[in-house]
Amino acid sequence: MRIIFIRHGMTAGNAEKRYIGRTDEPLSEKGAENIARKKYPPGDIVVTSPMRRCIETARIIYPGCEPLICDELRECDFGDFEGKNYSELNGNAAYQQWIDSGGEGCFPNGEAPADFRKRCTEGFLRTVSGFGEKYVIAYVVHGGTIMSVLSELAEPKGSYYDFHRENGCGYVTTWDGSRLMLIFAVAVRLAVAALFNSS
Image (cartoon, rainbow, N blue to C red):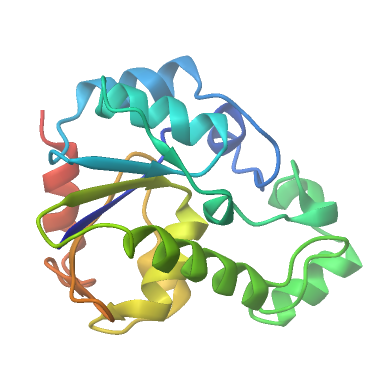
C-alpha cells in the first residue's frame, strides 16, 4: 500500500513561526495559493485531522474527494506556548526548561511530546487498517503529526526532527502492515522537495 504524507499549507501563524497546535487557523491566502500551484501524487482516499488548515489543504489538492477526519491526527497542544513564537518566549523560564529538555518535556498546561507521538501513531494505525493494499492513501496533516508517525514507524529510522517538512511538502512511503518504507531516503530532501514542488 502506498501512503502519502503532506503537511498542510501555510497559515498566518506559520508565517510568523508561532506554535500553532490547538488554534484552528485557516490557510492564509498565500498558503492556499502555494498549495494550488503545486502538483501532488494522486490518492484514492484522503485522511485529515479535524483542523481547518488540513481540511482546506486536502480540498485544494484532492477536489471531489471528501476527507475522512481522524481526531487523533490533530497537532500537539502546546499549552502556554500556544500562539507564541521564539522571540516572545525568549527569557521565559518554562520555555528555557523545555528547550533544555531537548523538546521532550511536557508543554506547560499542554501535551507531553511522548503522549502526542503515541496518539498520532495510534490514529494512523487505526485509519490505515481499514483499507486494502490496492489503495493509495493521502494523509494531509500537521508537521508534528508526520514527524510523530514517521519517527515511530519509518524505515530508514530517524529521530522526530529528522522528518520535519515545510508547509505543503511531505513524503511518499509504502506500508507493509508494520513499517513505513520511505521511497525517498530522509537524507534525500531535495528529491522529495522536487516531487512536491514541481510546477
